Image 1 (cartoon, rainbow, N blue to C red):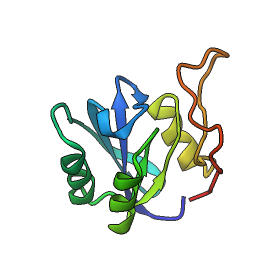
Image 2: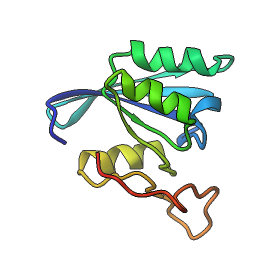
Image 3: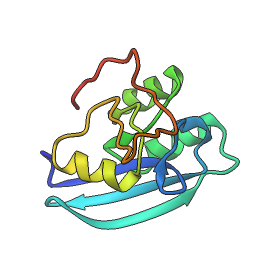
Length: 130
């Protein structure tokens, strides 16, 4: 991780990364300083339309969005605000955060601990380091 201070957003479904940004019931915002998590806040997104979700990300001073599926429109709008995105990640949000902090998180990463996977997004998507 190259930045000393950073905010990361992760759309949640319970403790997992939401399979789809546009329908995530909650958003986790993590503040990182000098390689350590210094604050975590969870916000309810229930009832937010896609435009309002995008505005929430843009207005949160977030530098990175780690998410599952995301529409092309949302991806374009968020990236155009200078926010990096690591899409198509599945598994526990805390596992994704830990992998990111080790420099190991890529688009399409599946962090499932068992052979049974609830969803799989990575087929056909190119992995790209952020």
